[in-house]
Image 1 (cartoon, rainbow, N blue to C red):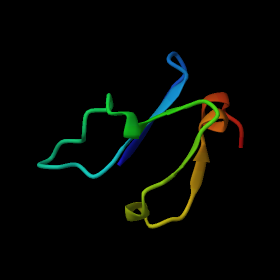
Image 2 (cartoon, one colour):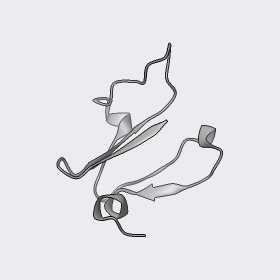
Image 3 (cartoon, rainbow, N blue to C red):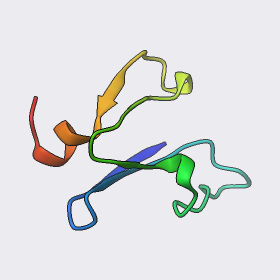
Length: 61
């Protein structure tokens, strides 16, 4: 699983569950999150956590 904070495009990309050694195409809407949204980290990470896109983009704690 990896998380990309793209400040240039004002979005966060979350890619998880690789298939056959490759991650899904981040163009899919389910992995792109825009400012104002929050999203849960997949349970496969072993934690329960919702991330705020705005906080990630702005670098806030």
